[in-house]
Length: 343
Image (cartoon, rainbow, N blue to C red; front, side, top):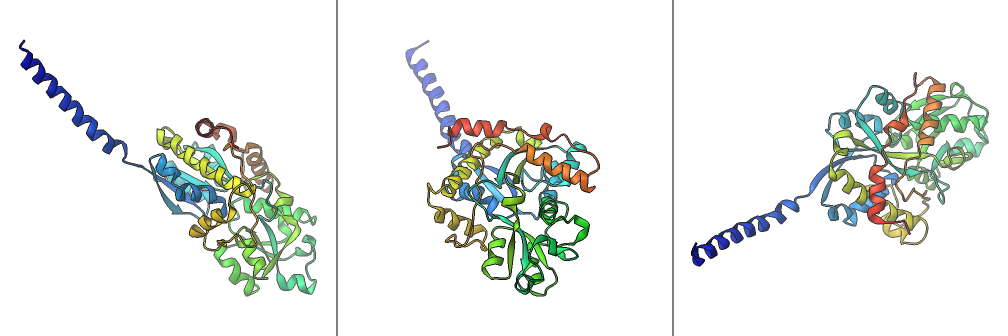
């Protein structure tokens, strides 16, 4: 074969390879869209930080947020792949879904009642009842009306635990279910006597002098160490590489938040980010208290099992689910390997 012919063929091959290489970056940089449901509470802080600081972008992921009122709302969406990631508090509905074989996995805790925060929420009593002396302790709530966001959720556990501080049980009070945004009007109209509420709304109510927490009924007392908010993956999303990359970015945001909570980074910068998504959260952190998170992205399975046992006792659940079988820590372990030991 003539040298000119060989050179011609080599040039053609080189050009073909170059064309492939030139087209590859365009394909590789196309971000993976990941749909995520959030409650838009301070428990979503790490997620918001990861979005705003570009950690998801670094992982070639485009996060699409949607609002939910509870984790129970998103289970059907996760099960049918209309949603990739769900967040919120554990619920009887979630554990019952496990028993039905619904394909979802618990992959990490998002927020917990951990130090240093001691004002993450609890049972708050209407101001006039406290000022008049009608209510001095939890025991004085007997026969009163207490608002909860969702009775089929951990809010029920927290109310029952708080009532136990005054030797009361669930049937000693009237529980009224209503959205968080109705708590303030309900207190103003005296339609309820107390509310089970969380930060930042708890701080808002106290700052406005509308209600105040009973010391013995605060979550820092009744629910120390418990998981408040967890993250779920749909089974099909969990099979993708995007699921691993998503957790890397999320844990990076969680760690930024934790460093700020520990006083080793600018908490006001984090508060400014949260305020963008949760306007009720003061951008300057005024009057706020923040709990810590697990920087390894672990899951407090013992806490979830405690919730379940309480629901079984209360009759909210009929049979226990095998929660441990639905906990998958491979994503958090991978993220920890990528990010290294928390410092």
